[in-house]
Amino acid sequence: MGRRHLMIRMAGGHLFMLLVALAGNAWCASPGEGRALATPGYATPLAGDASSVDLLGQQIRIPARDRGNTLALTVGGTFFSPALGSADVLPVSALYGRRETTRSRSRLVFGVFVNELDHALKFNNFEALAHLENTTIPFPTREIVGGREVKASSIVWGQAAAWVGAGYRLPVAPFQVDNDLRLQLFYEGGYLYSSRTVDSGADVRLPPDTVTHGVRLRGRYDGMRRNIMELLHLGVAGGLDVEWQRRAHWADANYGGADYRKDETQEFVKLSGYLMAAAPVPGLSERDRMIFSVYGGTTAEKDLDRFSAFHIGGGPFPSESDDLARIPYPGAEFNQFPVSDYVVGTAEYRRELLFFLYLHLRGTFSWANRDVLSTHPLRFHESRGQALSAGLTCGLPWDSTLYLEYSYDSGLLRNGVSGSSLSLLWSKSL
Image (cartoon, rainbow, N blue to C red):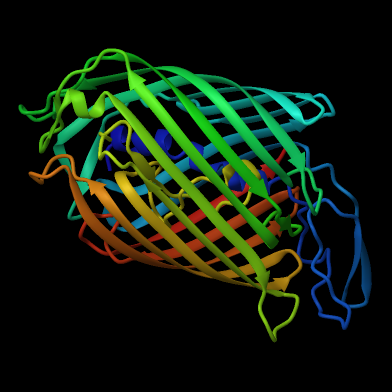
């Protein structure tokens, strides 16, 4: 794979790694430091709590941890077979930070070209909110069809935005730092740009660069308890987003396939949400868990385009409260493919092998009206996919975490060709 393609995937991989960066915040131990044998009253050590566990007759004390203050770095990569477009490997890296005080709450995900920053000022249960984000990858993106990149669909594009708003936050059981009910309203202003590349097809017509603005209503509920590795352990979480946005200057466009008319795509409304639950497995031990999730989104007027569409992407299964809304599909690149309507569901069985070592087996199903940019006369094409995954999450010395997952995809990622991926990620708490 050429250097340019390697750099594209490095840039695209930053944001979706924030979950594993958070895992670096977990209390991590070497295999000789913790409870590994079941006892009659065994309880899984939970995130942030002080506990005492035993291993082969040795008692180990785990100190309490402030989960509201953390800084962590994640590095690693995903390997593809066969290649995903022109990528055999996707290097990834991200810096994650979180700080919570009685007066404010801040969260940062830094990946150079893809970044997020949230800040909230607290006034009892009310909050003044600000959000900054950018996706400004300076390398071409291309559609993948039949496992190969379509060069004619190549463009460079990006966007940056600032949100300001107000919200209401109510702590909920089990009253950890991430357990709350949030209702938030934002006004958003931003800038969207795009440009052709030397590979862009002759029929590719891009809309003008433009200022964007809109309103976003967001609701979040997180009643989840996490285990010591920051994995979902018990509870329910969900969220809902309603977004209206308008581009100030717009025009008809064509990305090499169907036409996108200005009067259809200049303004749009999107509705999306998710629901997930974690629970014990009936008849089995405390060490066995089932995790279910469903994600869905739609736009009634079919008014989305390459830039405004929902984007399904990859990364580890979401666990951090502010990351739960991310749409996960195993082995995918960051925001890999645009869709106008979608449903993504997962069912996972997880087994606690040792208190710092967890095995998961997960099935993922996806249905979507996929935005086919370059090879289809219609704008949207119904697409289905399934993925099977198996992986390990393990605590290591030096306050670090290892995440390893193998996935097999039936053909959604490569748009018609099945394949496998292997993700290996290491997170270090700083």
